[in-house]
Length: 287
Image 1 (cartoon, rainbow, N blue to C red):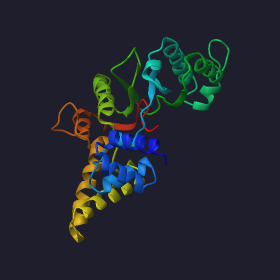
Image 2 (cartoon, one colour):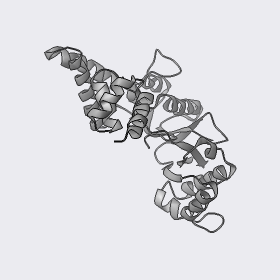
Image 3 (cartoon, rainbow, N blue to C red):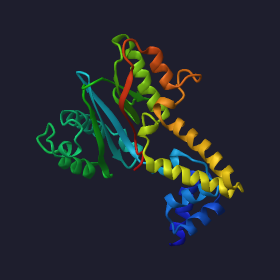
Image 4 (cartoon, one colour):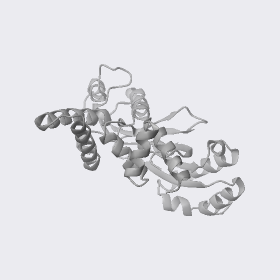
């Protein structure tokens, strides 16, 4: 690795972890320049704390929601800079893509192949827009929520325009009375703010749990703890991680004395309120 690339990687790692130059350089040297492995290395050493920010690469663009007759589609379109994300041509293009995504039920391939109002396909219009603006633009992901089995609610954080922003969350809820619709919107807002990984403990990806436990144990062992103490502390930290990252077990943003599951119980009438699915899009997350 050249000195220039090494310095750039050290700078990136410092920004992601908040760790000093010397430790970042050691981590990068030990892991042959791999940033993800370097972050894991620092966490296992107990130098860097767990942070959702660490695993993400910054990217710009917009997320958009389109709603009609109770169905909702969301789409993320990326650009290289925030300057382009505010460009009128980019916003106009994104709005039309949002509607096309809705018509194609959130199917990314069908959306890309569909024709726009000018009778030219989305992917060909995308090439023209890239040529005009001079910056890489990608149609990254989209998802559709139908009306089957529940009602849909969405929330746009700090909207740039109506239904356009940097973070959008959608949630489908069953057995929520019409007079409780405000609760549906509040749950969508909670998801946008708290970024859960799954609805409940059983839905959490085992790979995520195993990797977190591995990191937790390595950090505890490196702190000098041994034997049963390692397992005891590890289990406690892992349970905390699971609670903080599963929607039903998260602290309710409207009342820190309650969990989301408590709020659902309090507002239930004849049937138990159930969260069937949710999605949270944040621009550039996980790119």
